[in-house]
Amino acid sequence: MIKAEEFVEAARALGYGTYAGVPCSFLTPFINCVINDERLKYISSANEGDALATACGAAIGGRRAVAMMQNSGLGNAVSPITSLSYVFRIPLLIICTHRGAPGVHDEPQHELMGQITSEMFDLMRVPWETFPMHAQDIGPALQRARDYLERERRPYGLIMQKGTVDRHALKKKTPGLPTRAGRLVHADTRRRTPRLTRNDALRHIIDLTPAADTIVIATTGYTGRELYAIDDRVNQLYMVGSMGCASSLGLGLALAKPEKKVVVIDGDGAALMRMGNFATLGAYGPDNLVHVVLDNEAHDSTGAQATVTAGVSFAAIALACGYGLCVSGEDSGVLDRVLQADDSGPKFAHLKIATGTIEDLPRPKVTPPQVLDRLMSHVGSRF
Image (cartoon, rainbow, N blue to C red; front, side, top):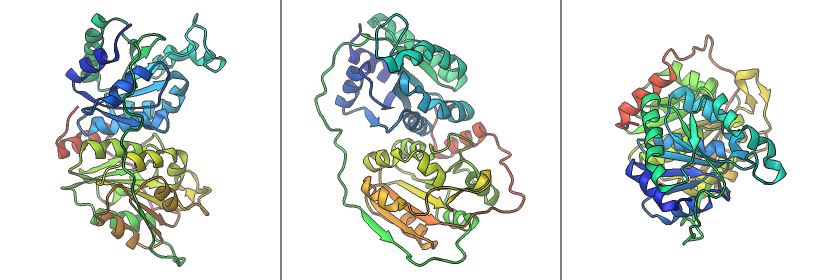
């Protein structure tokens, strides 16, 4: 058994200062130790996939990051592991507990995942080893992980067994998060006919996001492809998978690069998929984060099947979750308000748009790692 601070200090020496995760009883002393340390950043995520995406965002911003989770939630992280960190080649450390390990009595819901945890890592091509159980093993384990991360630029896993870490008391019950009196603005209550196209909205966003001081993250599907078609700028990142994770990636990046405005362009389907992240952004989101939902009430890139957003007030939800300024409407002025605002906290825009896309919509000719590398070079960060 090790002491939590032994691992935390060894990790700190290698540059690990950002932790995002979902609690597990096996992780409790470890998480408590991180929360207690004012020099470390802990983000309590709504689910394991968002934790992993937030850790990826921090890594892109030059902060070495750790994603923590229980193995029963590993399924929530499969998409960002396989279509975000793997595809873009983002190195990060994953600490996953091993509930239901063979031969260890546990609750029935952990039985199957306990049997297949290591195989899940193998299937996702994430090399792993057992989380160190003795102090003298911590440094070598972290160094093996670091060597792999630097060489391959992909995740490395540490699987934690029961009873690995000694108890560590939590000194503060709350993470000291801000309480904001946000503003909700309905910019235009009239139905615009016809609605703006996605192309109109993206062109307006480009005009308001100069490359020198902004980073733009576009959700998967037509949004990223249209943004690329309009102007393939060095400050843009096109998500090609991990649907719903653009906002959690943006959170990690905004926290890591406070000098840059980080603009996340989401879709209604993606926002619905991981709406729990609204609360995480409302709690931890800094002033330089802007979250835009372009809502055409459809899954446009798969045939325009309807979503359920016709009656959903995303801006009211964002306000209730703790965002600062929240604006909704059907006019491009919605974008002007949030992208030029100086309100405290993260800003949110809900803009209704039309379905459809431009003719002969291209796919990016630059690979995801190339897009990421040029963005990181542009903002002056490295893994």
